[in-house]
Length: 372
Image 1 (cartoon, one colour):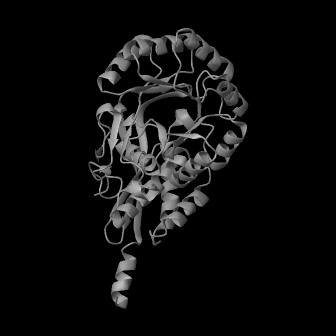
Image 2 (cartoon, helix red, strand yellow):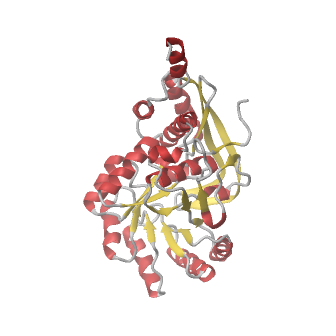
């Protein structure tokens, strides 16, 4: 290869620009968890353009009710750090992801995720491979649960009936605010959904005492959840361990499992059986390391997210399918959008994500370019 052709090949991978813009969308109805309610989507969109014109997309989904992050802070961090990556060689993907972590520090998970996602999408588009191959390429299909939010029992019954009509076999139920209403909500879902596998998610709304009380009341009704997410405050690993030791339901650490170090502490204390990994908690690179650390420590894997469009949810699906072995999949939030602003990979019948047709990248992008 001549010197000029070698230079052209190298420059094709150069990051020419990084843009950040608001991603606002209406929801069908409010999404309510123990920490609060979200009635509209105020996310952030990242666009990475390479010197050869290849474009990669990423999404950040801050959720104040979950971790206090906001759209304004997410966009500011994306613009500040993204500008420092322009001119870098995208073939050095891991060093770029490390730079994002170093420049942002902890507490800006949605911004980390958006930039890391866009870089990874551009990398895999330029390499002409589906993103799942970056993580190992173990699987091509996943089946997600669908969530029943903190709604009255009558509405929970109707929601569960609609969910089962979609062919979904795992239903996640939000709890953590009122023990009596939570019990009634779960019983309503069971009545509507029959033998569906159930996940409870308290989002730190309960301590171990109330969580165990709910589980015992359910056991008296012959109900044993397949999983109980975050049945104690995020720093209360002893509380998580107490619920885990009860044997009433396996525990999944969510808010408690926001970093590599946190997952190792969970493993040492035997505080959970599973770890819920969300790209929005710490970004793509740390989520990847969390998955490897959890697996090495003998913890089971779950993939989840905040309120995200098909772009971020599809990226999470590539992540989980690529690594393989995720027993629980919770990637249903595009169903809460009034109109999903993305085209490409979508959640389909029975909660399925089918990544086999994707030839390069995430396979999902904005239906309309926000910066034409």
